[in-house]
Image (cartoon, rainbow, N blue to C red; front, side, top):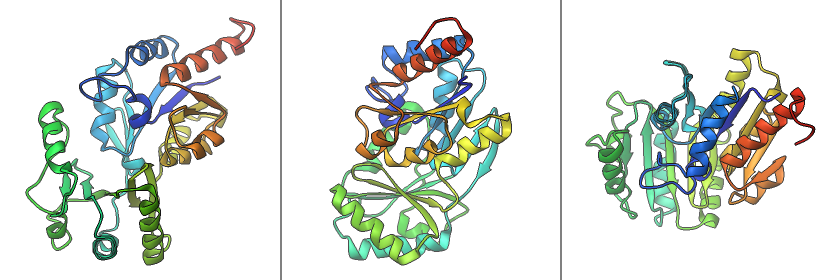
Amino acid sequence: MIKFIVSDMDGTLFEGHGETVFDLTERNQAALKRVQEAGIEFCVASGRMIGYGIRLLERYGFRHIRAAGFNGAVCYDDGEFVDTKPVDYGLLQKIVPMIQEKFPQVQVIQIQGLGSERIFSRADRSGAKARYGREIEKIGIGKLPDITVEEFLQDAQGILPGKLSIIMPTRAECLQVIEAVQSLVADKCFITMSDETLIEIGNRETGKNVFVNYLRRAYGLKKEEIAVIGDALNDGAMFDEAGLCFAMESGDGAVKRRADVVVPDVCSCIDDCIARNRAESGEIKNV
C-alpha cells in the first residue's frame, strides 16, 4: 500500500506550468485533489530553495507540509526544519576560483543560501540575476543581497551556503566541470546534474534520499509504502529508498531506465498509485 508519494518539482510537477511555476497543468491540479481524497501523503523534494516546496503545498491545500530543498540539504516537516546541511565554505573557496580559471565559458555561477539568498558572480552571461529578480518580485520567494559570489568568498556576511549552481553551455562541458571538481575535492561534496547544462554542488551528506530516509524513520514507513517520481539525475538518489519509482517520459534516459514506470506527468503517477492501493484493498480487481 502506497502511503507517501515524493515528487520532484522542476521538469516533473512543474512541467507544463502556466505564468508561474505554481500554476500547474489542469491535470496535475486535479490529481493533487485526488491524492488528498485518497489519503496518500504527498511531499516534494527539489533542488530549489525550500520556500518553493512549502508554497506549492500550501497553495494546493495540503494539511501536512513536508518538503526538501537544495537536494535534501534542507528538510521541512509541518513548520519545523528537521535537517539542514550547508555546503562547506572552504570547499567553495577552492571550487569557484578553479571553475572561473579553467572554464571561462561558464554561463552562471550562483550560490544559494539556506536563508533563500541568491548570490551571483560578476560575470553573469545569461542574465540570470535579472531574471530571478523579476521572479522574486512576482512570487515573493528569495532574496538578492547586494553582494557578488567573489565578495561572498571573501566574507560570508553570516550567509550559510546551501548550494552552488553552475550553468555551462553544453552537457559535455558540464561533465568536464564535474570531473575537475571531483579531482580537486574528491568526495568531499555532493555533485549532480538537474538539467542538461546545470550542475548542483552541495554538502556531501545531501541528496534527495536524505529526505526520503527522514520520512521512513519519522513515520515508520516500509520501503514499499513510498513512491517517488522525478526526471533528472539528482532524482535518482530517491530511487533506492522507494518501493515504486516513476520517471517522466521527458526525463533523462538513465533515470527512465532505473524506473519501474515511465509516465507523461505527475497526474499519471498519482492515479497509478491510487489504483494500486484500491487493487490491494480489493476495491478493484487489478491495476
